[in-house]
Length: 489
Image (cartoon, rainbow, N blue to C red):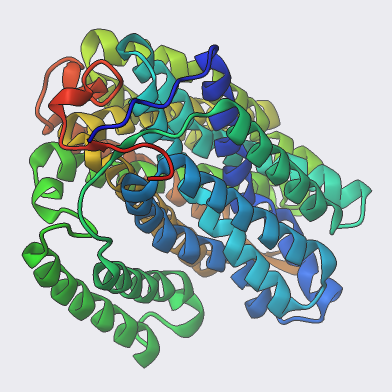
């Protein structure tokens, strides 16, 4: 027997705003410790290698839990899982706030990273609950929060670190996490749509094992050596586990990831484009702050403070907020394929600007903002493309997989940037620093990734956004594979 749908809030805009705020908060967690990393060894007594795990572990847990929790949300309730994810963020924040032990900090950061699943879960809720004419703009904003949070996190963390005890930023993030939970419970309805079947625990474990092995090899390969037995062994294990996992998933009636759906050109190429866009975007975040902080003795560095270097990314974050509705309008009129192609081209142009303007702070900010603008349009278009190609009952898992592909792209970008900057150095002012050519090479590689994303996008099936983009809202539930279930059933 089908239960009546849960009533939507009287003001759906509140739900959109609350979910977007949650997305920004969890995205901020990905970069909030970056300005603190050089100081962690002195503050905690840890080695620099151990300190680097404060960033690496969030990447690992985010990659593992995003597709898994997306699938759990599809099956057992998206809002329920979203609230649980925010609860995990709060616990992780409190752990980091009360301790200076590196092991406790890494554990807390692992919990914070797992909360990134909030973004695909929020996208799924919006698809289910909003009327068709509002889905594209709301989803565009929700998806863009990944980039907005990354851009906002650096300057906010820099200000806190420079003016307060460093534990303060974790207390603040925990308090905001509690506020997020309260707002979600008051303003966001639980979708009655659920996918059928049992949770594929073996599939989740297999996917997690393959991802952990792959990302460990990618993120630690520079420190361990790319040809070391540990790195090559992890890559080999990742390949073997992925093949066995794929064979298992193809035999399951309700798999963790529906590989047949994921292999459709519309879905597969969208995920490849997401990986490339994630790579291209992340280079902007990684090198901008570091470049402007380089001493003037390098000949190109500006000797900027930690706060100034973080503020260089803030205009890009504001541009992302402003451009997400623009991307939605382009997708509505011309299709999300057009939006994504335009975005990839803008990102490439931004890196060309960066290549030729490495000596002026304002031109560096301008180039970084152009890249962020392209990223905003891309991140807004990607979920629209995903939703057009998957059944309603798999929205959470499919968007989780797409978010995962962006994270994998960021991991490869981090490894590439680290390798380039470490191998193209010179002595400047008594210290070793990357050469200007090293930064310029990073810009060229990132521009190449954006152009490759453009080529992949042009191979996508064409067409304007159609009803497939917004299926699953209240007006079309009867035509989906999902099963309306009363909350708590």
